[in-house]
Length: 291
Image 1 (cartoon, rainbow, N blue to C red):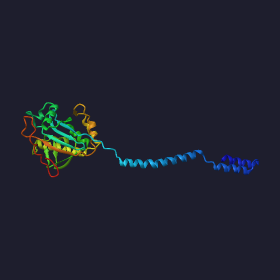
Image 2: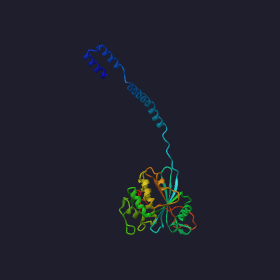
Image 3: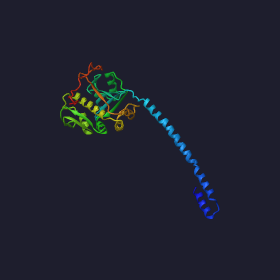
Image 4: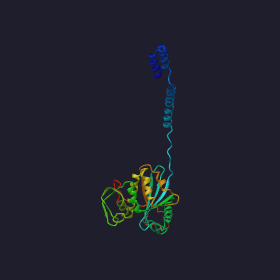
């Protein structure tokens, strides 16, 4: 169009072309629309029409049929804590349910199986055999971890909250805590778990502390720190062949409800039979505190 205008100006100057002819040519040029513009408008119109149909249909389909939640099969895991001399110091048979909850059954290390205390059995395999026979429950997996590593676990979750009925100061374990709630990590958490002297019920109160600690860990677990915690303890933990601890940790999605119970027989059971009834649960204060 600019070229036609220049032609008109030149023609008028040279008086070689009739002005009416030039104006007629300009009028025709205005009527012609670029082909690219027509195609672009048509494409945008078609895309808008498709979106108007597809997007609402997709939303309705998503609302009507949400993806099915994946379920994780329940598993029983025997957790064994060992002292500095690799003797069994803590025994917990934990049932990890499909709903994400945990039922933890604690056994006293003083419990006898075939005339031998559990703490004196020479290998984890023997402890697994004893616990399975005493409880009548098969363990799908087992894990052996040094008690000292529980300090690392508490740090991995940012500290574990516990509660004591009364203040304690034990020079043997290093436990020195006030009455009421405390958040423990590292060496403090380890001292809380190890104390066995100056407790009203001895080893039973120590078991109660282990249970309180497990419940405290469960309350702090998330899908993020569960894997980090498993990665930390996997450096020193011993598990049965074929069990992927990191994969197992991915089952935790949020705070885990831990229900605890104690399986104990003060008189022992030399015949390897389970006692008729467990010992009474250790005393807990009105707010769930322990000795």
